[in-house]
Image (cartoon, rainbow, N blue to C red):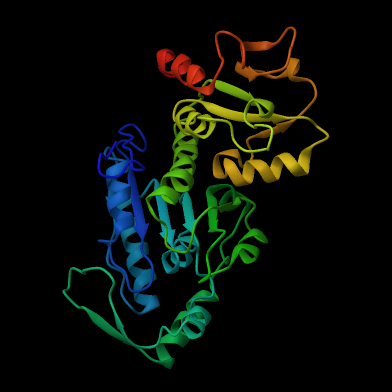
Length: 328
């Protein structure tokens, strides 16, 4: 873990020996903070991050050329780069706050006139000019969104949308075409915390699928996660962050409490709970490796860790138990 920033942690095995292509946002470059995060978090991966030309047709042509040469295992695009990444069909992709209506976004947010690059670029250019003709170029390129979508593409693309993004809101556009649309806690520009808690779990899902990797399964009864005021109990969020690094974690709630439990998980667990929640009154039928529960379950098909018992009084006890197992 980075001692200067406790949120950033390295995962040497994630995307190891694979290539990740990053498509940056408007007025940025391949030397953005997100690129630094990617390289720090995934030291075993090759992260390719070209400076994108200002003219969109030149940018998409460059990206196709890079894809042909590098054959990336994963493409990640943010904002404007998310618009481009969606159009790179044939690759696993993560789109973060994608600006699918880039021309309109430029107009409404005053991205015209002389603009300064936010990060250094290899050509040394520090500013550029946006006129109506360039805005139209972006509008024209935006119209190519979703042109190559197939059922296979729908499986390969994730969209992540910040719930505090005041710059771009294209969740509805994306979700109408792609089913894997997820809200995360964050603004338009990701910080270290939103990146680690939102993007990294999705990278892990993709890496696991590519490697046909099956992790041990942990089911967590939601009664072990909340206190009397429906707030997270001590250390449970820390436990979830650590457990998802080595296990497939699912959250289990009563079948009759769907709306309230879904809202709670979205608030306090967020992205890791997406499609990882099971509503059932028959926990004895859950097939997996471990079940953390406060209920008396009787016979189960998973090793029962009884939360609140002498052995597992707190979530710190459960964290220690799994740390000794080392992912087994």
